[in-house]
Image (cartoon, rainbow, N blue to C red; front, side):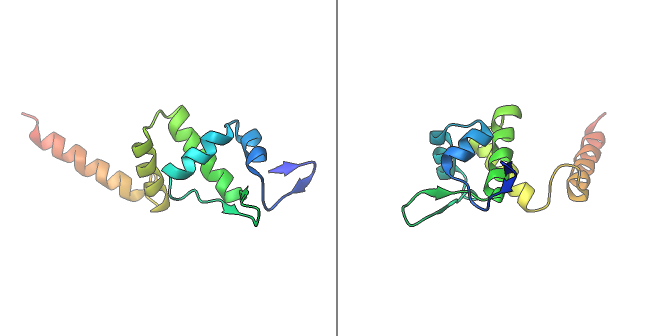
Length: 108
């Protein structure tokens, strides 16, 4: 993200809070719930977020707030994302096809 025309490598929790629209306590809580979210800490112990961390927070926010996933459902969705099995990929479509074929065979 750009701020005053300068792209930063690291962002503070307050900057990330402002960018994402999430309160700092929510960011800290999600850190405990999602193992993939591990912002580094500087010498003073302050969290420093990278762009990858911010992108992950945006994905978690989408899953929880917009798509209405539970915390466990969001964790599973993130695992699928990282495994390359996002909905619409060949593997997901093959599983869907197998499921539908199974349903069709069970119909009278």
